[in-house]
Amino acid sequence: MSATPLLPAGLRRLGPAFFSEVQPEPVRSPQMAAWNAELAEQLGLPAQPTEALCVGLAGNALLSEAAPIASVYAGHQFGVWAGQLGDGRAMLLGELAGQEIQLKGAGQTPYSRRADGRAVLRSSIREYLCSEAMHGLGIPTTRALALVASPEPVWRETLETAAIVTRVAPSFLRFGHFEHFYYRQDHTALRALVDYAIARYFPHLQGEAHPYQALLDEVVERTAELIADWQAVGFCHGVMNTDNMSLLGLTIDYGPFGFLDGFDAGHVCNHSDHQGRYAYGQQPEVGLFNLNCLAQALLPLLEREEAIAALKRYQGDFEAALAERFRAKLGLVVEDADDWQLFTRLFDLLQSGKTDWTIFWRALSRFDSQGLNAPIRDLFVDRPAFDAWAWDYKARLAAEGRPQAERQAAMLAVNPKYILRNHLAEQAIRAAKDGDFSEISRLQALLARPFDEHPAFEAYAGLPPDWASTLSVSCSS
Image (cartoon, rainbow, N blue to C red):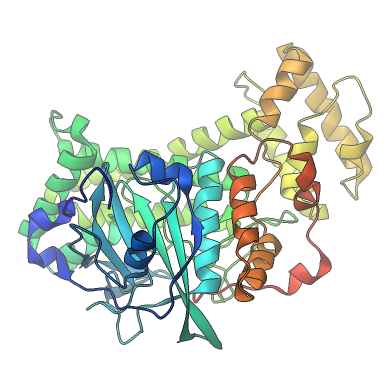
């Protein structure tokens, strides 16, 4: 596969209770639809994919040294215990340059639960692009190395075609991995898994007097930081089940995700989420619910008081992380007692007029502390209310005394101009269905540098077209 050999997955060291041996199922006429040259080079792979890589990453032949496995886990789905789950359409090929290499959509596994183990082109393009868009935004995430398309038919709501995404991450361990062994009351396996995770991914905790509590403390902090990142850019995961929560604090499992257009704290991006459990404004609370599930799973290794103490840190960790991000988005460098009043007044303004989240923050990055700021003001229906807020914002900027050019440059560096809006992904999907993969490549390059101006792509930063309001994504996405 590369000059660096593909090593067996670390999970293999723990024994067959943790995984099943699997084999990919071939697809007809595989074609490389997208290739991440930058990531490939980091992994020691060629900048341009070879035919052998295309065939291997389609699952039509085993890459050299590959020994595919699917891991078993469990989880709470939509707040309800779902029992045993597992990699139903994912296969871990092995490790390369310290990263796990996984195929998604390569066929059935013992955990497919009577499903076909396939992924469709539509959802695979969305995952490929959003993985890299989040990386470009500086948000912890799994990565996407390759997207292989095939005319192989796959039935979802309608007849679609197959695709396989090659996903890359330091680890795909989820909260649900630990829940699985807790609910089976297999405390020996649970301890082995936790010890493996600490030794492999949190080695700095090995010298702690209470390493299991230290692990939970760190996962709480990473989760709080991650969700603060999501809220800051208006990202909605769509299906924050515990089996979709990364132990390492990565964004994982891109299904019915979406970015906010007009701001609405109650926005639900998942058409399957009829109760609005995973609405944008609910994500912080769901993060705590999921951490409670993880803490419960670790109770055989922890004192209850230790678990409770770790969970109590979440609210403070999250609020501190979110405040830090919004101060940066506002160009503020000094923490102030009135920060949350300034933030919430602004959120109320944005909510009342459904002001476009990304366009507003990018425009605000050029806020003139001495001017009228008509282009920003015109984004609001209630302009007098914006004027009142802007007056207080100007006073805050004046109190800090930061040079305006410095502030504006700092704000432009944290308020992206480009995000993966649903209609942009849909345009790439429609072209790909006709055999044209160029829009995937174009979006990938653009979203890798979302804070740059890219004058030739100005239309990609505009308001979504009217037809975008008809788009919906669901758990099959």
